[in-house]
Amino acid sequence: MNQSEPMRKLVEGDWFDLLFDSVVQSLGEGTFAMFVVGIIVIPIYSRTGDASLPAILLTLFAGTLIPMLPGGLSRVAWGVFWIAGAIAVLGLIQRFR
Image (cartoon, rainbow, N blue to C red; front, side, top):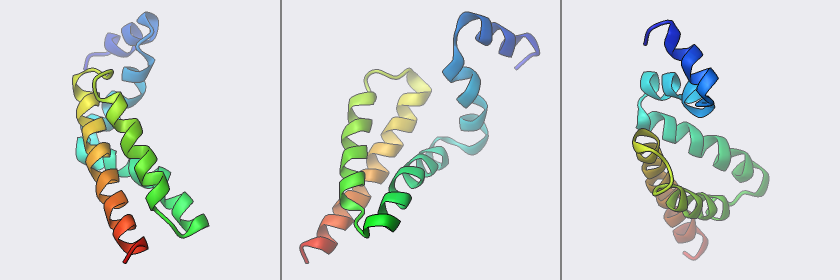
């Protein structure tokens, strides 16, 4: 990325790309998706002791975002979808065991 690229994104209103492109490129899409899921699920789990509800809501939300996001970010949304879906399934198994 050259020096004029961030300024061009700032002027054209690509705020989301300006803020998250470098983070996603340096961490990788899967790791970034894990951080997103962790930031949302862990505080709610520590407060309520149940990870099922936030994981189910995050799975539904990521599923609706997948067709709306551009290429690289849709892969992050797929990662969030699968990770939150796995947490939701494990939470439901634990609850109804």
